Image 1 (cartoon, helix red, strand yellow):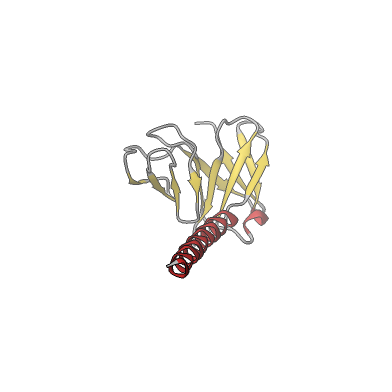
Image 2 (image 1 turned 90 degrees about the vertical axis):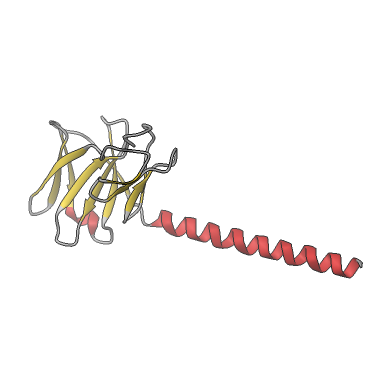
Length: 143
């Protein structure tokens, strides 16, 4: 009987370790896609170099003036969009991926266009106008 118990303990322990390892790996891989940059707001604008997008389709932009970061996304045709990473339902800071923004508080999800794709949020994210020059993306914070 002791051998059977030892076998079961070892099998359960190995299975748990494997599951935790796979979960941890998935979590780390999802985190590696986020690139955070910090910048200043000057005259109501945030300027980001286009070169920041060499290996990324989105950036998380932290500023000296906003209490929450901005999500800056580049679509497949080279257009940029930017949203405040604040859930419109619960005022929680959103988690970013290359495919969506997710609220950790109640599970609301938003597309990379800032649109609600899953509630309980009912309003789209607060967006900002983006324009570009040869080398920069300019996010206009003034409305």
